[in-house]
Length: 572
Image 1: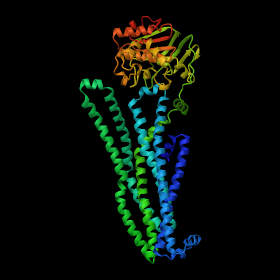
Image 2: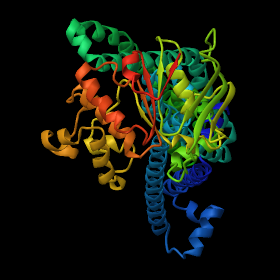
Image 3: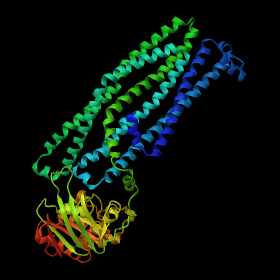
Image 4: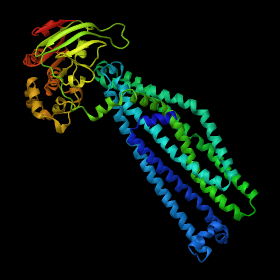
């Protein structure tokens, strides 16, 4: 029940309705399966004794209703009826299986999307203690594992369980004692095997989560630090580091699949022995082969249907047990953020209006401490910044410069104090509108493996990109001539992952252009020139100072020389 609750917790109300409709299809499929099995008994009864077509009360009703001239004609009719029911049953099963797979695999898409939106809806501080490779693993790998290992086997389990229950109901109606013996034998055999392996499955499942996390982390570290790895000749070290978790993960997957298939081999012997027992039982209680043949045919056909179903039920249960930890992770993370914030991410925030900033910005008595930090990073900070001024923040590493700016931008929310824009407090309600005022240039610019234009209009759909704004931003950042004249396809040139085909100064100027694309009121540069040579820094600073008194500019720097032309300098 806990697993079912968590699965339902991943779905929207519409998806739950689809699940109920799918269950109705499964029930219909089970009815058709039982109908196909049930019709074999009267057919074999007429084969064994043609006179039963008129002697059996129920068969006689059908015989008289259709006015058959002879038992032979009636037998041919029953044969075609069985064939028709089997065709309809198999078509129903195929369609239900198609719908089942389509539903479950589409949930991989929707749950991944929902989980990504869930992470993006979290406050910035959430990401400070999270490994990006771990979050990527959850979105890409754990969702796949939960869908393939819990939802799909769970749906198959449900489908086959309904079929088995319907078939057992038929067998009980025909011979309650024999049906009870068969059910008890098979049920006991499967239960004993499952009880003996469930703890190992649970342990393997939790271990698979840990080694999968390590696989993603080591692969991400190796590919992200390729320059250092090549320079130091550490390729084998990182390959070896990846080897152990990768091998453990493969072995865990293999073990879970072996355990799920384990009963099939043992129970084939049980099933074959069971047929012999059923034959001996029927011969003992029935007088003639004419009475034995219909029941024997019924059990043979029922066994043909029920044994694979029982195997799939067992495989489904073992898979659900093994992949349960992956489902637990998804359920915990998806439930971790209020649905309103997630829905806003999914719908988009294009209609957010900017909070006016026409006079000044103030921090009043602001204190902030990072989670689990021994002391606050900011304590009783009071700052005032007038509109269209250039303000510098200078200090040693760890003095709180970046933290202060992150608080100003609303990425970090102060535990004490207020942020005021034109004497209006920045709260959770108007924070998205306040953040529309900012253009941000960090020390290390993130550039995607895409064109210059799409990197400048970062996050904007290609059809919505304003190319005039892109050109204007490139000109202000003093890199327009380089892009148009030196790059092979101009603004449509793909610049490689993290802008690997550009120099450091070119990447920084593209970062400035990106920050300027949306025409922000406030431009923030967080150590944006500290890693550059003096000449390149001067070029970038010249581009920045061209904006002086046109925009509010906040500069974070280690060196006083970087902020010498600022209107106001705060020493942190």
